[in-house]
Amino acid sequence: MNLKLRVWRQADARAAGKMVEYDAPDVSPDMSFLEMLDVVNERLTEDGQDPIAFDHDCREGICGSCSLMINGTAHGPMKGTATCQLHMRSFKDGDLINVEPWRAKAFPVIRDLVVDRSAFDRIIGAGGYITAATGGAQDANSLLIPKVDADASMDAAACIGCGACVAACPNASASLFTAAKVSHLGHLPQGQPERYRRVLSMVSQMELEDFGGCTLYGECQEACPKEISIDNISTMNRDYIMAGVGS
Image (tube, rainbow, N blue to C red; front, side, top):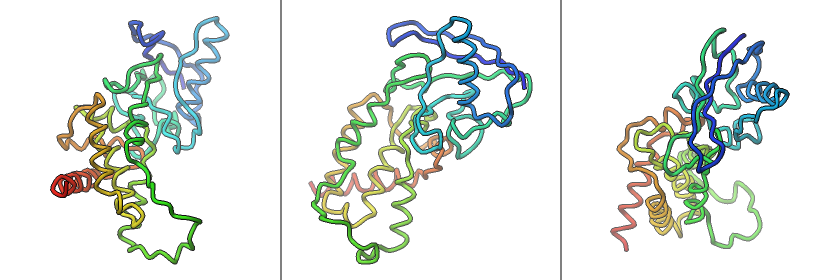
């Protein structure tokens, strides 16, 4: 496959960025999108040019680092797929592919396709944990949890914190991310003692960051590589109301 890329290049956070075109010849359909960028970067380096900066780590759809907007869609055209799991067979020979970083005020560009997502870390730090001393690990069957609760918790815990929900949302809201982190602990017995304090703290921190408000467009769940449901936002909003009533 012979492709043409139009990639956002920005030297640093203070520099003005722009889209730059690159040829990507002889691309194997079996390459992942990141492997294709690796090959492009090798050629750029050989030509004495700066390689394209982009985030990556596990390349197995687990870490959430591979945050790219591809042809205007977070993580590209395949639903339920992170960028590192996207293969070039999803494109056609001769295609022009636009590659950009997440576009959100809360995710400032550091360089090229790399953005600062530390706002997510601060939301987690505000309450996305359990502080109760639980001692050693219990036998799995000794703590009975209804299957519906266990399933709901596991579905929410699948969030990898990539930020696609923010990038896809017209308001750049972080509600799906925050709701997933609130919900996966709120469904478990270990999370009950701090349930309402947790939601107040995490929502408060979310509002302190530069995220927009949620108006339930639903673009977040469509873009999420783990297909996390916006039902979690309803759970978070309910807990937030209950926390306010009880305070």
